[in-house]
Length: 182
Image 1 (cartoon, one colour):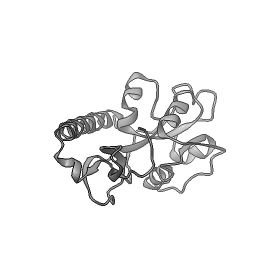
Image 2 (tube, helix red, strand yellow; image 1 turned 180 degrees about the vertical axis):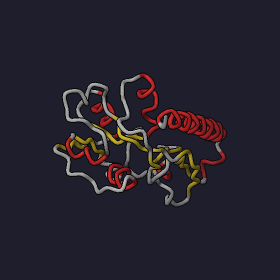
Image 3 (cartoon, helix red, strand yellow; image 1 turned 135 degrees about the vertical axis):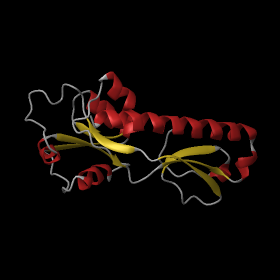
């Protein structure tokens, strides 16, 4: 199930959840997976035939892609660059980050992306990062499951696997960040 709605583990329909945040869930075990870095991304052809994008202040001249679940992402990145949120000439908002990333790849605007979620698209050139500086996101991804389910062998195996996979993903993102700075 893919949802941003709260989960009631007592109903027994869901054993575990991966959530951005969610550490205040009662009667659960929370395992930190990773805190993603964020950065602006767009399709490689998006910047053609548009005014030059040379500094973050120029972003006000472009269509910025937002997500309803992560409205703080753009202000967070811009604040780290010492600027207020620009009044974009155009702003599109999407329900999910995946939709915003797809819109960016289709040259509809510039999305604020979580690096681990777009690293493959950046490597393949489907997306480009107009600015090389990343900023730590304000929230982290967590694996959350009920205290009662913690004894289930399948969940123990899944938990070990997903924590290791998240660690690997974080290492890959850190390696990629070092290439952006060059």
